[in-house]
Image 1 (tube, rainbow, N blue to C red):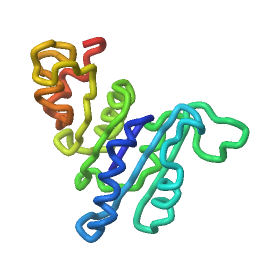
Image 2: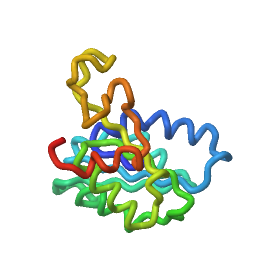
Image 3: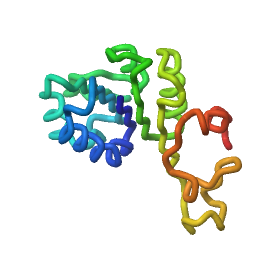
Image 4: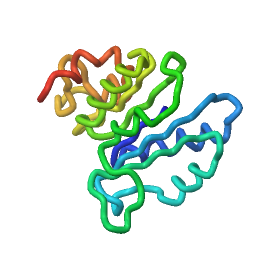
Length: 164
């Protein structure tokens, strides 16, 4: 399962290309993508192309619709109940704004996805890239040095604290 919010789809696009190139190695694939408005939706052509694959489930939503928008409206977490997947056999990659990742991981946990099967990307203001300046410090970890991708069960105690 791939869950992306906003520009979080950009770093996950190569993941989708890899999955498509090595399709026989992967089971069911679900992509949930949310953007603020229809104008903010990234990679429209690729999304439509991926949606045309019968073995991929692609759902797109926007927070604020226009009159021309015919898709789902609401935050990306609202798509999780619509997705058909086996929680115990799911690996989830969640990229996007921190608040979106916080609520997405909560929803995935409610569906039964084990926390050690969820990966999140904690992009932050990185300056030095070696853990010296402290701009990317997140509790006891440095995003630049220790991440930016973390298994959720390793960072769960931090992400659920507001304004850390």
